[in-house]
Length: 190
Image (cartoon, rainbow, N blue to C red; front, side, top):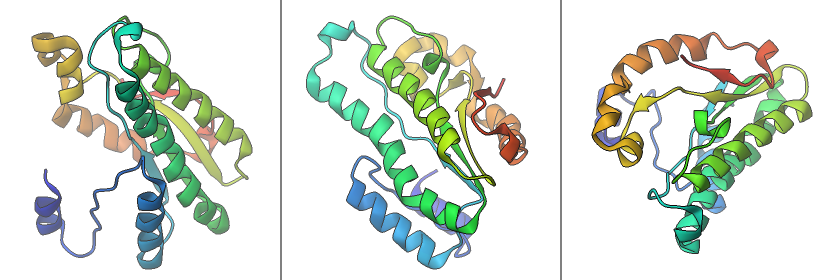
């Protein structure tokens, strides 16, 4: 759904924004606007990712590799850097950083993506140890979902995996039932 359609469908009580999470200034401006108009999030779902064009690691040019790292790792860190202080000030909240099955295993042709998602696992688990009580950080593997990203990796075979609409029906209740006690535990939506 486009940004405009989301705004029209859900109205003024919701905020929809497109933010380049790899650009810290853009993230800072977005967070400042958000926190000026709303409370700190109870549930922050940090899902920034692109995937490399399938190829052996040595054939992926440095520009593509850097863009992936900037979005998949630095983008997540930028959002953490600017939202978490407000969550700490309030004394509550759950940060869910979206990882991947490839953040806990590997496959050929997607080495940079695997590396970025392994980084999210480590970053999140370290963050969970740094947060004060009342706040949690959880690395979450969403499972295998039929998305445009999966089409890049699996081609026509991607259609055999869970459609996003079906996944959402499982994911929303799962996410809404997360507790502070889940802090640091790598979880998977199956």
